[in-house]
Amino acid sequence: MLLNDLNEVDSGRGEMNFQELFWQALSEQDPVSALRQVLIDLRAKGIEKGILLKELGAFRQVAARRSEEDEDNILDVMDFLVGNCSPHMLID
Image 1 (cartoon, rainbow, N blue to C red):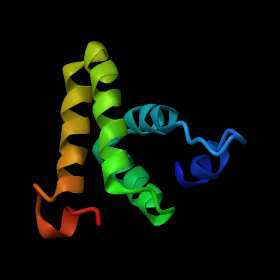
Image 2: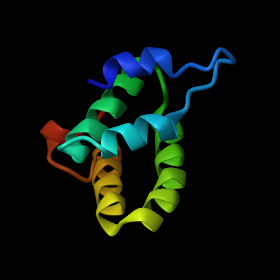
Image 3: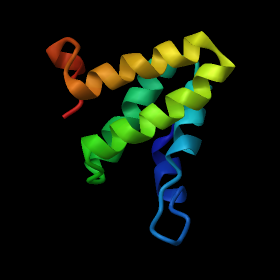
Image 4: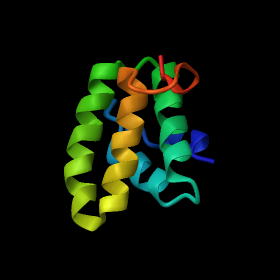
């Protein structure tokens, strides 16, 4: 699914386009699961939780203009990062 996209998002300048990954995840049939998997993959690549929360916060501002459902999905996934969830959903 989006795992292959993680390798392609690197722009050659060492920057990752998080918003592109997040938009792709939101377009999946199960956006919360897709976003969660993107974050798990990014954490596995060494991206710090603080950076991911900052990027998700900025993305949330943009996505909220499109739909309340998108914003709710992003907030759900942010909860997985901060531990406001069941232990099995926590993203370490």
